[in-house]
Amino acid sequence: MDTTIDSLKKLLQERDLRATPIRLEFLELLRLNTPSAVTLSVIQEACHNTDRVTLYRTIQTFLDKGIIHKAHQSKEEVYYALCNSNCSTKAHFHDHLHFKCSSCSQVTCQHLNKEIKFLLPSFQINKVEIHIEGVCNRCNTTT
Image (cartoon, rainbow, N blue to C red):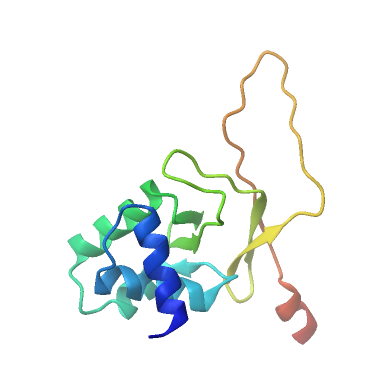
């Protein structure tokens, strides 16, 4: 058996989820596209044999279980990416920002060399999301 499939099955088992064909297909799609996020429309197209209700339940389950995160959302599209091993069913821990290329529309998770800290006196910060748009290094070298 393929070790990649085995690792995906193990991930699902660690989160108390069954390794159904749709879940494995979904995770394999995200894994193959790493470090890029995948749009909902691409996911729907790749999982065309699955009804929409099952697909949306799968997405919500993976979000709740700390397996995927929403990397970007615009009026046109939602992008999803795999979480790192720090995420769990209790919380998501992402130490990266999301970069969307205005040329190729690719969304990637970009890890930072230094930690960014925000200090807002008398405020409690629970979550920080940073979305940056510009031209990616691939498109920047071709123009």
